[in-house]
Image (cartoon, rainbow, N blue to C red):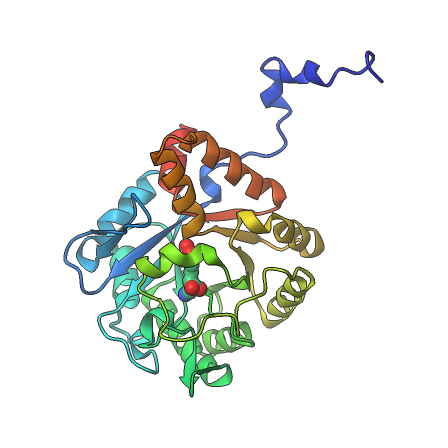
Length: 320
Ligand code: PBG
């Protein structure tokens, strides 16, 4: 009891930093990047100030700049010039992602993660095959498996399925192993909530949908036990890393999953989380650097090992 115990004693001097339990470091970061098959120069993404869609011609140079900052990994999203009803550009050996991965791997030593999803490649913008405005699970799996294999063939180190179709990890693991890619890592977006915070991404990746919404496959924000079931199934199907998304509104989920499963865990600080901070900082309503460092530290403290964030490059500068 006070005055025997004085909690402020440890907060006063350099000792404050010595007893810090959690830290955010460069090696925790994954930088998401967009590569656009139709553009010839970097196109700024309006709702994500400071982020661009890069043309294939400059993607390797842009990734080199990321690698020069010691950021260990990028995750790539593609905007194809051709969309159809079967997502054929997603598994085309000369598709935008496959070409980008080859270009990057030829020139830069960095971990390349590819997002495996069909929404950017479908005319209707949904993450699976659609019939009568219904998103079909099982016919989608084969396309996702082909896509993952084509990414691995191009040189991707990690494939990251994000479409929330049941059985995806099993389908991808089996296909990768059958084709000799047993070392390719699967980072599964096991827990992806139907979230308002993806809105800027849909502008960035042109993956807005023609009808309905994603609530028939993405999770209800009200549920947390369901997240544990999703993770448990994906681990059984062969996921190496589990991803939870969005990050900040779901710190309790990150904590529960890490505590329950102790598996390598990634959290995606999504486009809307980025846009909110940028917008408030532009207005002078908060300090960008301290707000970002505090919130991403919280994501680590909750239990994430990795953070996918559009702030990655700035964080490295701030850490220096
Ligand atoms: C789907 C996908 C989405 C994001 C990553 N992969 C959007 C969605 O499900 O609508 C969102 C990422 C972000 O908001 O930063 N392929």
